[in-house]
Amino acid sequence: MKNNTLEPIVPYDWDELEKRVAARMTAKRFAHCQRTSVEAVKLAEQYGGDVQRAKVGGLVHDYAKQIPDADFIQAIHDHHLPAALLDYGNAIWHGIVGIYFIEDELAIHDPAILQAVEEHTTGAPEMPLLAQIVYMADFIEPGRHFPGVDDARAVTAKSLQAGVLFQLSHELKYLVEKQEPIYPLTFTSYNAWVRRIGHPADN
Image (tube, rainbow, N blue to C red; front, side, top):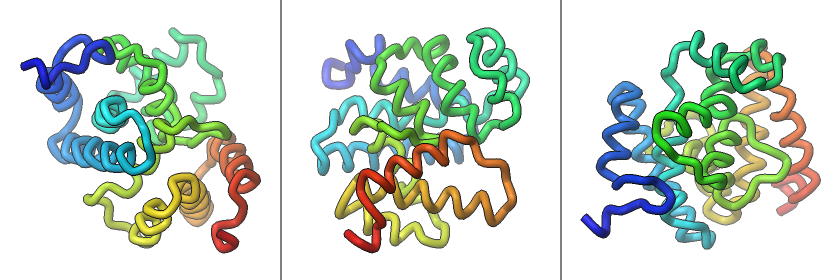
């Protein structure tokens, strides 16, 4: 159907994209991706983003989430990515390394979508609008139920950038409390966003 087309962003229609994404993950994970896609569209409409790219980016952001670790490790070597990535795991890999599976298996080469997927696990010091949208849509989609999610939704409803800082702060606190290793880019991202928009309490 003409109104189902995703070209030139994706070389096939939405139904085919959903089918391919669903085949890579559990039904529960796919439902999360669908909700993230819907939330990304809402944020794009609110903040003047590219609605179609937000829809696609939201759907594919976790495409690589359930790919075996051995495949990620091989991809890190094949694409000559920093060896330091090997010290982390899927929580980081499915964004930074996952984009290569999206290119190879989904034939999506759109730079904005790939950047949004790449940055959704760590944030980045400079995130374009689409990356911010996918980052926050993943965090606040309606299926999320964690302490602070309502605050995150309220903050994001007022300011997308403040939402990004909220999520970075939440992620750092969570990892510290669990005594988990923190990928350096997450620290760098947090510092950049604090400097950019100030402390949330001041806004």
